[in-house]
Length: 233
Image (cartoon, rainbow, N blue to C red):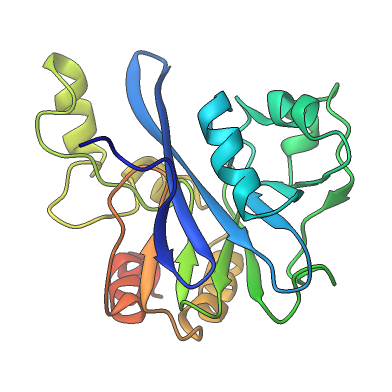
């Protein structure tokens, strides 16, 4: 039986898996989140490769009105979505505009949700990292926190040879999803990171989604507290 192009996560929120991509020799799965907004249209977070089938599945939900690049690392497929949806508003995380100077972004993401999805989503920029400043979201109706790269989990055996050793040392293949070691080391401004995390830990999170790992289906708030325990003073 084929995997559905859009997998429901909760009311008005779906997860979609894209093709694997290779970054410096490491294979990564890709996933995006699709949310049907109560006011009007569809919001896409961290878009994957836009196939005809996926395009049709998304458009069944409504008109694509917003596309979000949640950090400066997930930029591979934004341009093709810009071409397919020229009237959609494209929202950039800090640092993303510099990655794609030829792509016309309409807005910069902040710690305050724009009017288009205020009341439906919360958002926080996780600050203090030398790698990237990731925008994390909470879909209130489903209690789903939406991460991109800050939390990851790959099954044992996903990487081979020396890459498997690097992934294990980087905490990418832990028994539970975890913040990779490279991201932990990159937080040079830990007070700023802790301030961001305090807001996230206040959310009534039930589920946690991530681009590189299976969803956490329950007790999301407790899971996030454990996953970021290393950041405690």
